[in-house]
Length: 190
Image (tube, rainbow, N blue to C red; front, top):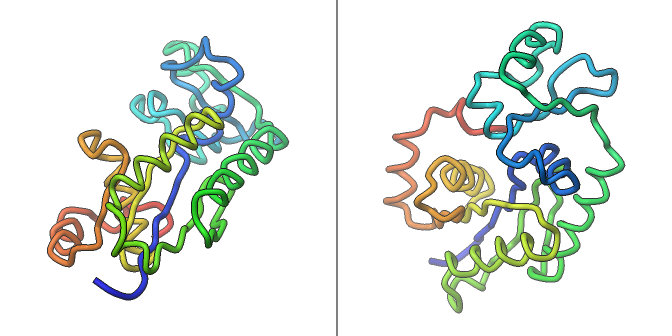
């Protein structure tokens, strides 16, 4: 393998994770975070997603379910999310020589040339561990030869628990297999 290799590091359920970092009693509970005016859902925990709560849904449409299912509701706290994002990105900057912040909770790391000298999955696991230990935020890592394929690998890292949160999709055979299994609409941002 030669050429470009990228890792996409994406924080899991970022806004909800930020909230539970400071209020751990809500870990494992269904959580939604609302927009600035508390009008719409802008983030959900895994448990809230499993209840069928959709991104962007107006809060008034789910208020009965929120009460019935004991969903924890937070107003957005962008100062908190920005601070924790900065912390995560600082940790990534210590790990990789080239970090491109993609959004508040995602960054691409250029691993060009490193793939010849390291086990990419082990490197991804080390990233997960360091970010978790230093910030309290859980991330998944997708690695591949293009940013789009790294995004797909990250999707698989989140979707399949057996991966341990890291997927190396640099092998063309594995790329084709995962592309055939995954509807493009399932990969956020693609």
